Amino acid sequence: MKKNLNQNLINLIEYYNLINANFLLSNNPIKRTIENTTVAFAGNKSEKLDKLKRKIQSIKNCDLKKNATNLVFGDGNINSKIMLIGEGPGANEDKEGKPFVGRAGKLLDKMLEAIKLDRTKVYISNVVNYRPPSNRKPSDEEIERYLPHLKDHIQIINPKILVLLGSTALNALIGNEVVISKARGKWIQKEIGDTKLWIIASFHPAFLMRQPEQKKLAWLDLKMIREKSKILKI
Ligand code: URA
Image (cartoon, rainbow, N blue to C red):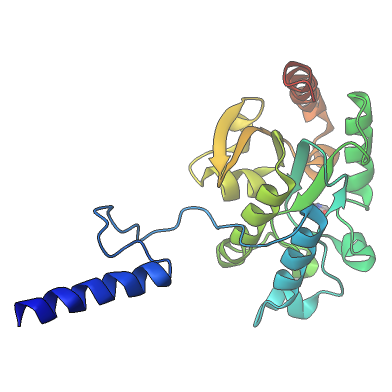
């Protein structure tokens, strides 16, 4: 009887080894929460990005997607070490399927040019990938829904510097307790999955169009990005 029991145990262990399971005799606590999404996409960077794009395209029952014309995924250099995150596509972006191509995008281009950057040197995406109707802010549920994809997106691009443009990007990635007027212009070090980031928030270009007197603060943030790029040898 005892011998049978031992043999059964040995068989069971062999079976678990065979299926490559290491949890049977592990003392490690079971992790019930997953803080960051896993980038379970195989292949090189563009293949991973294609897979992520298809995953977002397959989202079901989403009002943003239902009302939008195009998916707005990303633009720029996928190998850049500087990634910028906006809020969500507007009408022009929805039409063209590219982020920041409207008036706010033109201002963003000028801001980047001031620190000798352009879209061949940075990568740009948004918190949500479909246009919120009437350019409203994405709801908390919508942000929650797109956040795992944004985190995957960041991990695939693997930037060193992440620039959060406006409160939606700031709150989505740093938390709801921070406000853009206080959090802007300060470096935060954070890991998203395996990606170690220097994160800085600044004002959204659409906000700067409404409040041009805040551009001087945005300029300070841009200079900080320029300095950090030099230090990190980007
Ligand atoms: N505003 C954003 O936040 N993103 C865009 O792509 C365009 C305008």
